[in-house]
Length: 217
Image 1 (cartoon, rainbow, N blue to C red):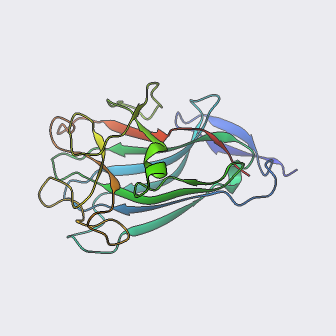
Image 2 (cartoon, helix red, strand yellow):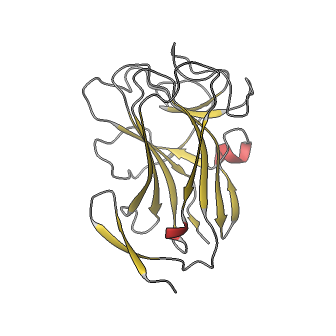
């Protein structure tokens, strides 16, 4: 077995994690991202242990607007989770809001590869994928996982905060009108950034999480 490595968790504390204990897989989280909106904030991707749930490891940070209009190519990301092989946990997507309503990032084509349950479909374009995400129905003021989770509806409600939608985000000059595969009817996950979900000058973190925990190979 490989020696343990030290990782810095959300709180800044150093945690020791044994590497490579799950059977030699290549666990990966794949996702695509569209961030058109002049006040797009910051998206964070985390791997969070199921126990203790406060132990969470940053995989990627994407800051600000990534696209300047509709119809551009979605960003493609792949997060290497091999450092966490053998651990059981969740994928978290955390979004820190911008300062105005031009603030609706979109997420699509997600999957979690090489778990003990196989490849996990997290794609909003499929019924299974949509059922595999949960949302927190409020916000936190620090990056610390909340404790209550709810299903994500299809729609564009500001009350629901996170929605599955197709055909374009409702706020002007935000989002793409097609999903990551180029379909105008395909669903994606998006954050509804209109008021009251953003407050200029206020730090707010909004959360989604895989509905189940998974053990990485």
